[in-house]
Picture 1 (spheres, one colour):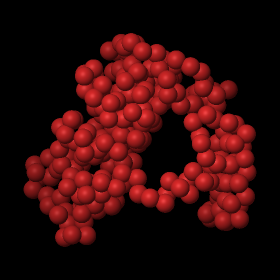
Picture 2: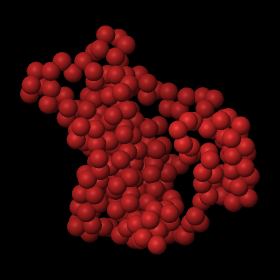
Picture 3: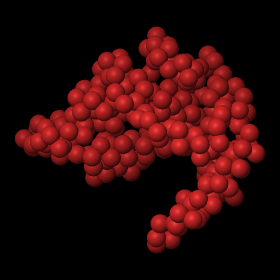
Picture 4: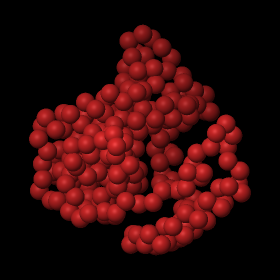
Length: 249
């Protein structure tokens, strides 16, 4: 099998890393270079990657995220920032209005660019033999991160990426049946989706992952019953996001 395909199909998330490990500078440079080669909207590259290299800062972030101790353990921790600040600097150079920066599409563009770069970084790290783990929970501490990381207006911390050598081996987790995520020409019917979601719930129950406390469908029924990080709505608007309806500020 093509080694790239084999690597992608073998992906798994690791949440326990060998402590005290550091990555060589050329290894970090390679991972960042691969992230930068990801496609982006209009070649805008609407993201910034922050390497949390200061041990004290890393410890502070880990303390704010007690459910993600891997932040403190991994060899390299990158935070991916949605970033239109650089576009604002371009606007200033050419006297643009920047009126569209607060639209939903602008935020989706920055999130997409950052996500593509992050996936490239993950693939590069795994190709070098390292384990990885995304940490989306940092959005719960976004207000603190804005201060800790000195984030300017028109930026937002999306997620982190842990990279390092695993302390324990992880099993390959089953995925949803293909019919639940892939169709041709038209969105799949609810009947198809309901059947496949029920089947996958049983698959995951049989898989028996220790960290999963609820059946698959119940987990998301509960999760989407209340906003995740509700304080971020006001924060995002203060940072220049999603304020288009108030007069294109």
